[in-house]
Length: 362
Image (cartoon, rainbow, N blue to C red; front, side):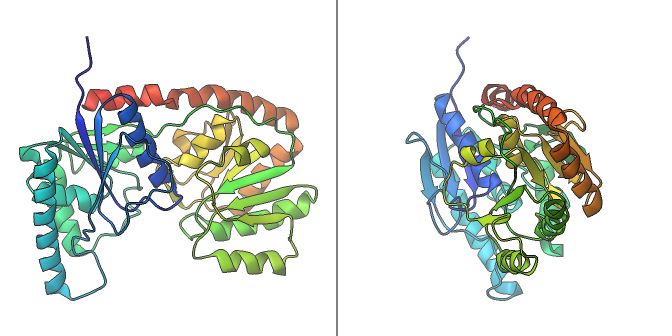
């Protein structure tokens, strides 16, 4: 039976940043377009630029709408802004007449419901953040509680998040992120890799403390950190203070494709305090990198099978993380076995497997 093609509109914020959420949105929009659906990316922010390349078939509409979530103005003016932006979104969604509206941020999902989008489209939220990571004020928590039960579904990235959303929507489902296969790393370089924003939520401070231990124990190894963010200056000062120049390497994300960076490494380490379904772990495993991560709430445990394709340690426990990294530096045989398992286990997150889950939702 031929698949019925849909018009799919994805509501998202800016895509010009090199982040996992941005990559997941672009990857998914491109996948839908490859399957010959009509795809419209509605960027509700200040720029229509995308850090990651979009296929020409993906239509992009950009309209800056804040829905009153802004430091400017006062309580009254922000409520007026919410109302006026909801009316603008209503007009836009009526124009698009999409079969499915996917909102990638909770304010966009709420605004779509307030705009009456369900009269013309199926409306779902697509939850990229851990349930407890985003702090909503009293007003927006009420809006959240009012609108989310009226969504056709909540798309979660793992079963832990699905359980958390069950209390507010009767139709949560799990559709994970996906990644493309790539030629494997040879695991011959004495290099540890981490990719991520230099922020507290990504555990940059925890990474620095761990790197100090690991690099002092294994002076012939290097640790590369690819990212930018609020803690960049702190990282630079730490490198100078601890005399780790050319051993703890910081590199800005300058290209949309860094698969060669994964292929040049032998271990991947994640130090996040919160994650939902991190793209970097998928990308690392796609080239067979053993991954080591804190067992933070909900995310890494759905990608890393402990002692099989990587290691999970107690969250925010620096000494345990350093010991785990050191154990795989010392044991090359275990690294190779984990690499083989990683290449096999990542197949479940292939584009085709994940597309079949989206297809059921359509």
